[in-house]
Length: 404
Image (cartoon, rainbow, N blue to C red):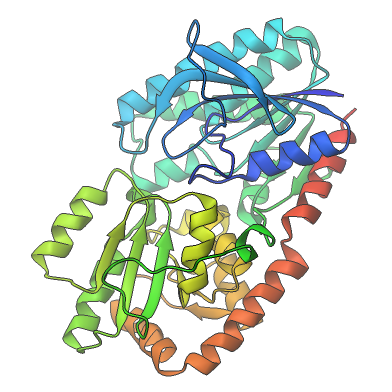
């Protein structure tokens, strides 16, 4: 069948963004389906297209996927209003494509929540099958974070959430909390599949030149965070623990923050004010270079702001990248990932907003590297057995095929 796939933040492995949609689209192509990917120009992402934009779009085939890239730049550094307008513009262009293209099924994935709009139009105006993937619960998460407080905007977003769920023939949630959130809106369990983010086992074991950033010695314990430096990520917690480690004179532990985001500049300023030489900031890197970095790391940091809605309502790419590379994980909030880490002995789960416990875990890791290696083996085992991207992509294809 021909699938019209909407993901505003699509990227191939050449970029530094998540590649879930790329992997899923490739698996659909492998199964004989035709995929048209509609996306924007995401900061850190790479669609694989290099030609000029004509009438605000460029189009081409990348690894068997037909890509329509709209000239709509987006960055986490953008302000709320600018991002909102970008979301709306993408939705408007997507509706036009959904109403004019020939296809059998429309698939849309968040974020943002506006990603569901072309699916709604396709379902009700063209009678097309619609599958909606929910990566984060909107507007629940931004409301819990205090990012969106206007009651009118929240009411409109709740309506859009309800309309997207009720228009979809089938839905996908990426975590237990997301699935529960969808069912709470009246969707039957039989119409929802939980397909979490996956582990790119081959990609993260194909490193050729492990490397460490400048300032990290070969003997140091290197703890890395790879992802957006935004409000939701709560990276001040890393600076807090760095200050504790500094007081303890544990200069052998380095905390490496890789990525970009709205709060990165503020974090750099604070780190300088506190004279935290044990924190190293590094720009984003593509997936191949990330695999080389992780091959030289000792532990991955899964960090989020202490917001209860995050505990079971997120499925972070970085966690699955860490365990793909055989890295133990240090998680700083409760929830389904913390439970998995404890149950599988593949890292440390500490209470939120407690830099002393966070520091204790890092010191334990640095002083017990043989035990840390066992945790890394357990992490890789968890990745292979439960979250292999190939298996999850096959499940994804089966779910879409069953919609017809």
